[in-house]
Image 1 (cartoon, helix red, strand yellow):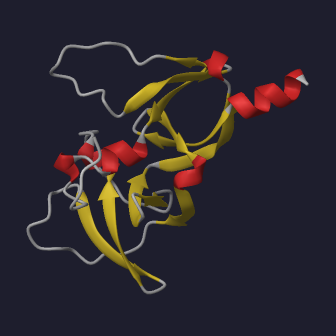
Image 2 (cartoon, helix red, strand yellow):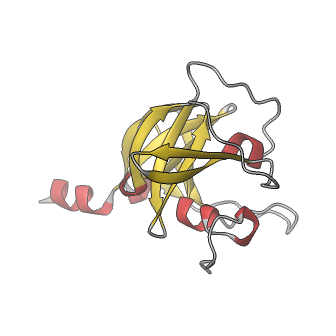
Length: 158
């Protein structure tokens, strides 16, 4: 019975890397994972919006989180990955350095996000997860992608 409770209180996350850090997002938001391919650039889009792709008839905006999070020089190689997400009833792709794995994170493995000064925006961080020696930054990807500064959606989640 205790094992069943543990499963129900854990959350499954897809973990991926951006720079030297590891992040986790709700696996239920993930539609598919694919290699980075050419995108069609959109004029006057913010730098972190690389453009769009045609995914089986659906036009999907591609956001490079490495650029959005100011992680230094961005290179596209055979390891660069696009995670296709379904958020706010829209399909969006995010570019990351690599996908790690799917993990189950129990409540006892989650810690609250640290408080920083108002100059550091942590509203998209749900908490920090620990698995063995790994520290995983758990993101609210829906809140991030639907924020006003992302300019992806007409309506903004609060």
